[in-house]
Length: 177
Length: 341
Image (cartoon, rainbow over all chains, first blue to last red; front, side, top):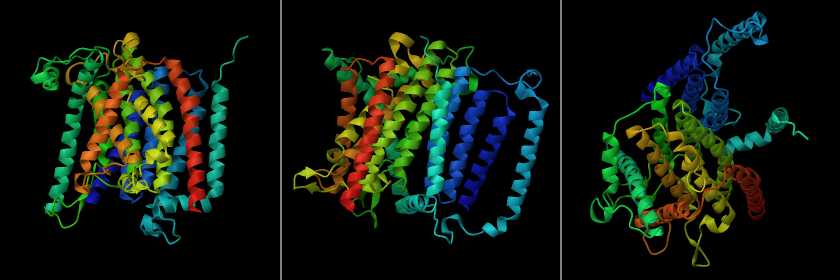
């Protein structure tokens, strides 16, 4: 089955790239590997018969958000990260933060384990859910998005607008008199 | 393998071959047109009237020494040109260039001229084109040189700014055609109004077409928007430190991107392979003619219009072009709703 082979290739790429994003120390490499990981995810969406989601993944994440990431890393000229010499006076280096992170990681693992036990209930192919919410057709997706999920959609757009205004306010430099 | 698969593989190979040739041809066309505009001959020594000049250039670039600055990042320095040229080639994958044909009865069912026809084709073109910026930005950063870095920064800022207007002008055409497949968009433009005006979207979307062309020139980093490689300020911009084949890949990517831009403009606004006088099997001649005209306009513009200033570029992109494209989109949406109701 060529589709299975392609699935394993994309999965391996996604997992490998994501592991390397946190596994190596050059922030520029992390950004590039994250883009590769997004590309592999988009390939998986194509295999799930959701081409629109795959392309949205590329346009929004790999195309727009990662350019911004790259821009920030380049402008700050972030140095290589080393484990030993972090600044202990900096609030982010506080062990409490580390413990919080460990808690979140544990929660994620529990959640993933819970989701995997439910796999048998999700046997139905993604494109053919009984509630008619197919993801393969752009028309259907638009219809569902603007009828059943209107509130969530509009709420998200307000949230993004607020975030945008907030970013402009934070980044705005006061003009000296 | 059945005959159909073989024919499709041949079409894919042919498209790839033509894209490679397009970049060579465009280099020559650019120098010849520039020569004509500056009242001189341009390249004249290699072959009759210098037509073999691109061949000589390619051989020269292949045999040059490959240099890499000591401070450059080894991996990203090599990856950047590859990314650039891969994105450029891949973007053409969902751009059809001819009507469906059976090759004069060779096949039972007609096959479309073009590599792939997917139902989100236009979005694929847009997504892959927007990947091209990584090649330039990474090249700028990995070279570890101030001119390259500034070229890369300018490229990313410019491409983010103009991508918005570019996508918004495309959205208006998508609404008119009611489809995201490029082939279907082209086929809705068959026929004429009143018997003599071709049903091309340029007549319904004149503002959209102008916005698309301006944003497209900025997306491909061509004059008058060629800030990433503004030679007076940045030596050569993001590719300053590159040499030999690695260098050659950047202009190649740029010329292929130009070809893709022109092909998309032809498919979306100029009716693709539809045109008078020719039977549909020869529609690709119309397609080539239209693409050729847009490419000539590109070159014409480069040697006519001086480069903008960088702040003017940003002002123009955000304060004029983007609002214009949004208004164009809203007016189109309202008209489509009103006329379809």
